Image (cartoon, rainbow, N blue to C red):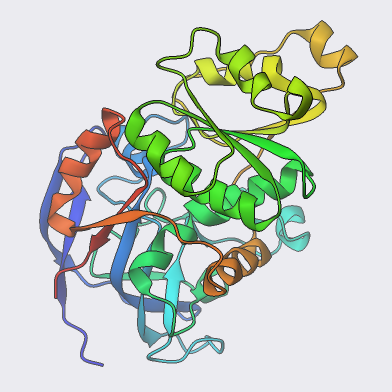
Length: 350
C-alpha cells in the first residue's frame, strides 16, 4: 500500500491546548509495531483530560491524542507475525508494555510501570496513520464496521472489565452512574448481555430516552430527583439497593453517594476519573454492611478479545455520531458542557 510522507492530525502543542489541525510526518513502525491507517477513532473524556493536563501523570507534549483507533494495517516491523498487511486492527489506550515485570507476567499489563499509553505518553489516533505494538493491538474481523467498533476499543473494554471486577452475577442489579455518556451507553449493553438488571443514573431527558431504548429498568435523573439515594434504592428489587455500582461520572459527588444506595455486601467500582477528586466512605457503614470499594482500570489483552467478541456477535450496539477529524475542538467543547449523549467517532480525511 502507498504510504504518504505527511498526514493530517489534531495536535495539542502545549498543555491546555488549543488543538492545531495541521500536517505532520507519518510515523514508521518499529520492529515489533504495526502502522495502521486509521479510518475512525472514538473521542473519550480521557482525551480531554490529557490535553488539559488534569492528571498527576506527565503527558507528552506536543501530543496527538486519541486511543480508540480502528483501521487497516499498512506496514509492520520485521518481528510482527500476528498481523498481515490489509488486516483490520484497533489501537487502544495500552499501546505497549515491558512484558517482563511482575504485572505483565500475570497478565496485568495495564499496571505495568513502563506502559506506553496512546494519546498520552505516545502519540495516539487523532491522525491518519498511527503506530502501536502488535501484541497490544486488537484484531478486528473484516465483517465488523470500523466506525461502530471504535468506541469498544476503550470505552467498551473499560466497562466490560469493570463489570467483571465487580463480581456481579446474572439476575443481579447494577446501578450505572453516568449511564447516558459514551462509557455508560456501552456499560448498559454489556450488562444486559451478561444477564444483569440495570438502573441508570444521569441527567436530562435525551439521556433518559437513550437509556430506555437500551433496555434499562429504571432511569434516575439527578437533575430532578429530590432524594437520589431513595430513588435509586426504590428502583432495585425489594428496595435493598444495587448489588454493584459502576461509577463513570466526571464529577466528585457521585463517588461520595454510592455507598448509600449499594446494598449490603455490594461492590462499588470506580472507573471515572474526575480531576482532583477523592473517594470517601463512612467507615462504620462500610464495615458493618461489608461493602467493597474497588478501582478498575482498562482491561488486559484477553479482556479486549472478549469485549470485541461481544460486539462481533451483535450483542453490543452502542449509539454514536460521526464527525470529521477537523471538528474535534467542537466536540471537546460539548464534552466540557456535558452535552454529549453516547459517543462521537471521528472520520479521517482521505
